[in-house]
Length: 100
Image (tube, rainbow, N blue to C red; front, side, top):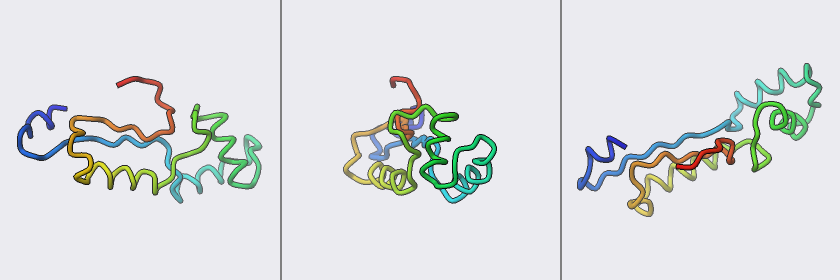
């Protein structure tokens, strides 16, 4: 917010993007390694269900995908988002239960 005020009237906006758990190769590899201990199963669908049940209270019912974060970044960096300034945009499937 302070950066957006510092850049006031310059035509430059300042926002943050705060992703939740995003399904990257590293995240998938980690959860596949630990899936046996709690008995989540072997398929990614079973493992993801286990992650959501035990670690992540997520109203969307799945982990985020890399392309979803990339789409948000592309939008917020585009002229179509020129009126968004000083915002923290959470992309976490609703996991963070707060109101901005």
